[in-house]
Structures are given as C-alpha cells and as structure tokens.
Length: 82
Image (cartoon, rainbow, N blue to C red; front, side, top):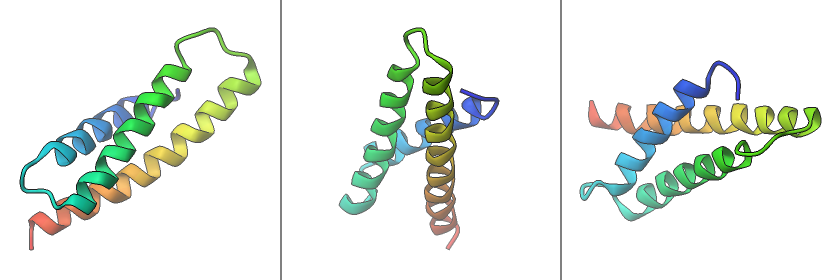
C-alpha cells in the first residue's frame, strides 16, 4: 500500500475500538466492524508477491477504504463533541 497505509492502519484501529465499545449503538458498531474487516482482508491480499496489476488494484481499494474510514471516524468524533 502507499504512504497512507499508516493512516489507514490507524483508522482501522479507531474502527475496531468503535465496534467494540459498549457505548456504540448496534448500527454504528456493525458499520465499524465491517470497515475493520475490510481492512483485514486488504492486508491479507498483500501477504504474497503481487503482479503490477494486482498491486494497482489493491492501491485503489486501499484509497477507497481510506476515504470511507476517514469519513466514518470523522462523523463519530464529531458526535462526541456534541
């Protein structure tokens, strides 16, 4: 994954924490859990040698996941400050 992989990993940790929190409603926990699982699957896809086209597809998927996680986590943080 590209340079945002550290940020993506951090966002995945936030998603996991949100999913596991007892104060999280079921819908939010499900969404957070799904995003975290998607990140896990993305990481698994990088565990073997990749052709250039496979690497490009993973990078595209990582970018998409990063945007969705960032939006989700930002929304959750904004709710905390209300």
